[in-house]
Length: 166
Image (tube, rainbow, N blue to C red; front, side):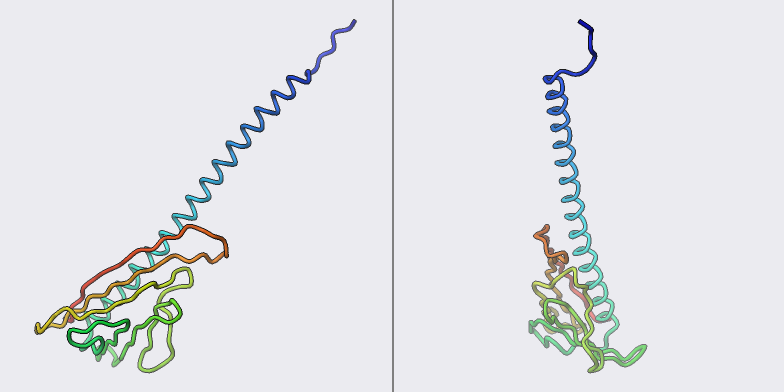
């Protein structure tokens, strides 16, 4: 008989099993990498939006001539900031449908945050208690929102700052 070169059935089954294990390992690795990427995207968006909102509110309040809401010793879910320089403006900051927004001089409500986050809570509390310089504490809880409709990573973070009018 001639010696025919080729693979036996056992060799083929072994090669296929090794290939299946390799493909399973690669798919698990890719799945883990995609979940980590999604988690980092949500965390980055929440952190960026929170820092942006807090810095904007702090800048508006530091240059304000007065803060009407929440009032002396009060606490509320909105704040009205009065400013005369560089232009006269009354800014009313409040939450509407999970988005933080602003109404300037009685105009239209404009969102400050984007659609990838929702505001879980927004609290403004006057903390100066009779001091000559008004101080306000702002507490904000932001949560990442799935824009794809899939059940993705859920992340929320609380931002707190205290601002005094200069």
